[in-house]
Image 1: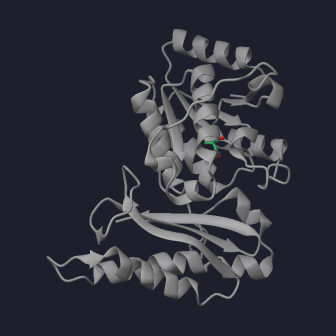
Image 2 (image 1 turned 120 degrees about the vertical axis):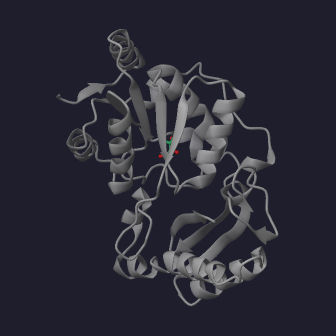
Length: 286
Ligand code: PAF
């Protein structure tokens, strides 16, 4: 089936309604484009579980602060369409900014809890409000049965699950495993900002994860590792790389995202590390 390109909300909504009339289920993969293997794995997961797959490509201005990379965010729509088609996507929703945010636009969706103030929320104060607003709009426009998000953006996934639960959104949120490069670097559209030296240096994030997992595995049965002892191992590994600057490495509850003192099953260990001018995030769940 040839990829349908919908540029208006009306086209996207009507096509999905038609699929629903035919009794077909629909999966949504929200993206900002610059697609990579991580996005492809979300499309694959949606195609496995749903009859029709819709991907959205929209670089959402409301989730970028004034000092962030909105203007330089990589964009290549034709390449993205080829990737989507190759992975069995049926429709791409690709609106202009004015289609999503017309002049009179004045609504917002936000999570009023500590969870958006932790981790990335400390340096990106308005980011999750922008994400919740655009994702709510995408859910309302597309009307899909399921939506697929990567676990690499663990805080985003937790925030979106909370939003969908608390606002009774009639959609199932599915988290999909992080896809990694050969040296373990998590796939991200922002990896394209790295020059050759920085790309090599970026492998240190995963080395930190491996060292932490190794230390957790060596805790004797019945024993408990303190969060600090694990975070220290990660900091030590990452600080060996001169190009790396840690923004945060934290151990938090996987649901509330509040800091924890002990490492138990379900704890999320997450980090943001700057490699040169590029801010990378990664995480693992114990
Ligand atoms: O993860 C992303 O690419 C974006 O935050 C999302 C979910 C598409 C919302 O703009």
